[in-house]
Length: 244
Image (cartoon, rainbow, N blue to C red; front, side, top):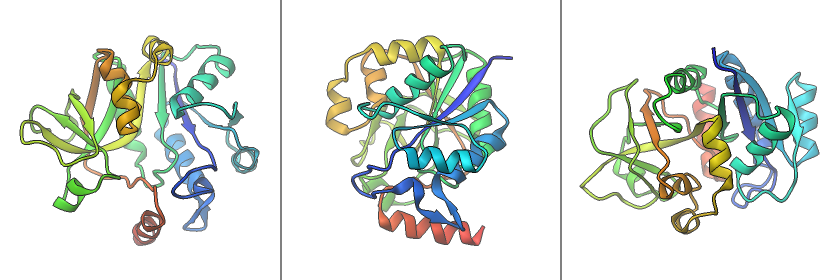
């Protein structure tokens, strides 16, 4: 079986919601919810990659693995790569970049993505869920992944674009979920590339891969983990997870 590392990039200096990883949800910090989901997937070693000693201390005091990284990384994937290269000696075959702001992501979703990557059908894999309303389509905080044909849960297809704006009718939009699984070679290639035009324009780093003809597949899942980017998101996720 392929060796897999799940690396969660996390930092306190978020523009829209400062100290986001330490926000309390159900009596537990957000980053710990994400860490536990990754651990409960049983799919690989889990690490938090952070430039902030507070986060390291929190994760370690809870029995987890946290790596203090450089503070000048331009993207979360660069932070993931530092841990992959320096701490893990570039050994894992599959490297998962799991965003640290999805406290209600299901362990099974993480596991299913990694199982798909083991089939070696793409360079990068990610996940998406159905869009439930026009408000979601209009919301530029919600990233949409575009595909050619309608997907069913468990199905993986090629991702054709990632956008924030209202999509055209030519392609089918899904609610993108902030998790990326790279093959070893794909991660090394990705970080060697310059930041691309669309990546900078849309502030979506996955577009660097697409603009350099890397094959990205997206899988459909039933659940819709909420990405917490604003105070409003935080209020919503607290209500949602309280009910769960």
